[in-house]
Amino acid sequence: MAQFKEQVNLVDLSVVVPVYNEEENLPILIPKLVEILNPLNLAYEMIFVDDGSSDGSRSILKEMALKYPLLRVIGLRKNRGLSTALIAGLKEAQGKKIVTLDADLQNDPEDIPKLLAYLDRYDMATGWRQKRDDPWLKRISSKIANSIRNRFSGEQIHDSACTLRAFKRECIQDLIPFNGMHRFFSTLAKMQGFRIIEVPVAHHPRKFGQSKYNIRNRAWRAFIDLLGVRWLKNRRIIYDIEERI
Image (cartoon, rainbow, N blue to C red; front, side):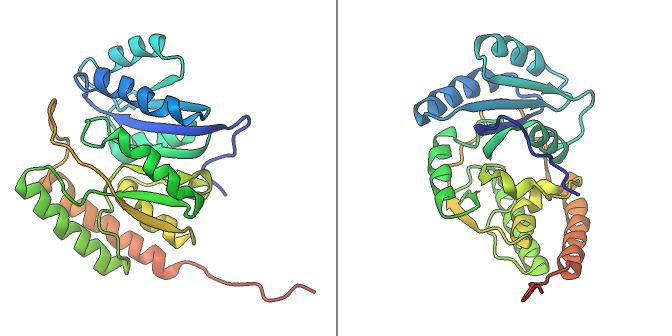
């Protein structure tokens, strides 16, 4: 049974942005998104999911929704994590195509048109932060994590945790949501037979706020999730119908 139901009156594009304590970044990000999206001549919506922020993020989102009619705000009662915020936004999305990105301004909205252009030939274009502008420890831990994920999952994805992605709606129709899913989205899509391409994207240093993730709060849980994904991949049912009589 599909986890994401087909929507009526689909728009061309949904942009889904999870938010947790990003009050200083939102007034910069939202106008920038509008500046990038308007020239695309697409019917679009922006869905910002406030993941139980403890700062003024939700108030700012509500204020900006009055200024930007295409902005929708989803507020979660408690902080549930990036995967939950993404799933909540994806379930609300009505777009034939969907883009996801972080709210911390480290993803660059200017990469969105480039990613969308690949959807003529692929089902998902996932960002590859070749030159990450993060502290050295975070860069090294990310490289190690990606290497381990690829070894255990049998994939060759350079940047599996990059939130900046563009994909067709079909990619989420049978997606199985779980906490930690955001790290394996591309792998899960490939398991369903969708065509994936990694596209180099810009990455900027964080100017405001603090990173929500570090080695201590994600390494062990991410490894447990990886074992689950490996099990699922090895146990998936694959068959081709040769003939019907």
